[in-house]
Image (cartoon, rainbow, N blue to C red; front, side, top):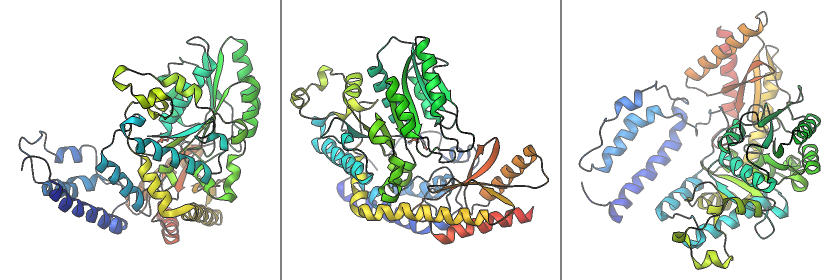
Length: 475
Ligand SMILES: *Cc1c(COP(=O)(O)O)cnc(C)c1O
């Protein structure tokens, strides 16, 4: 085996790979959801040294089956309920394959006009589908861009906010809550804000939503101390429990003090494809300077695909643009085109728009709504089942596909009960029949069941509930 794979060889192996993926998706339900592999299992089964001579591609496929697959946790399994589901779908996989086939590096418009312009159209489409404000559109002052993750998106938003805020180094402060995603804390560190410059705003103890009154007083204190209040991150659908910060009231505080409002709707934002969920955008049109949601979390687009919009793209481009000689080109200099490398941290960029475009065209707005509605309906049903069983407690707030609950363990103290909940979780996940994760709410361990894998049907949610109860009885 030597030399490049010819187009004919590619055709033959490519068909086998596509068949392999189709078989995988058709049979994923028969596999244990969470990989049973222990640390080092996969690594020790692989050769320590790379091959000197090329090998037949069949050898790669054989090892995929034999070594890699047992080390896979099956995110597309219908009983995958952990974290947030990372959605994949046929059209998204094909879109990614096409992107790989084209092998485009879309750092600037000139390196492939279609890579940039298709992205512009698709992010504008998505803004429209989600009912986001008109000024987020590229033909207005704002614009959207596809990033690898919400973590990168929030860092980019922070850099733009810091540029707009001005002020010397070491003086910028940002505002989050205990429920804000950890990526904001990291963004603060990466941006070099310095210790203690990521302020934690109190939350309402009942709803876990950020307290705008406390936010206002923290900003006032910081401003009085000579700091530059730079960015507030409000979350719509927190990672732990899908709590929702009061964006209109937080936005009013930001407006009063001239602070950038970033809205992190990484998981829940896509629910706004459904008109009856549009209320989650309350305050965004009036107050948000930037907004992020991840089609890779709940909109059938396989990782990675996170969309970040700005109300005004000027501070973003001003803070990130550079023009080395080797990238000078007539189109960039004309100012008539977008160079998305100025909208993100890395220079290079994948042609991610292809998969989102494939997904939106395949499903249409109605298909996307159906997916989100099913997830919400199944979560409601699951929550009702849990609520009806007096041995459990369930969080009332579950506006999306996530339900948080826990066995009450009557008779056990708080610490013992938490340990018992975690032990129950381990037994359930070890069974391979389903996969849940956990969080801590009001100091207590709670189980998280997140619905959203495209293959999940009512029967899988029912089976999960039966399994959880059976495991409790077994104790
Ligand atoms: C998942 C999540 C993130 C992080 O998303 P990545 O794309 O994995 O970086 C940020 N914020 C919220 C609210 C999330 O749920």
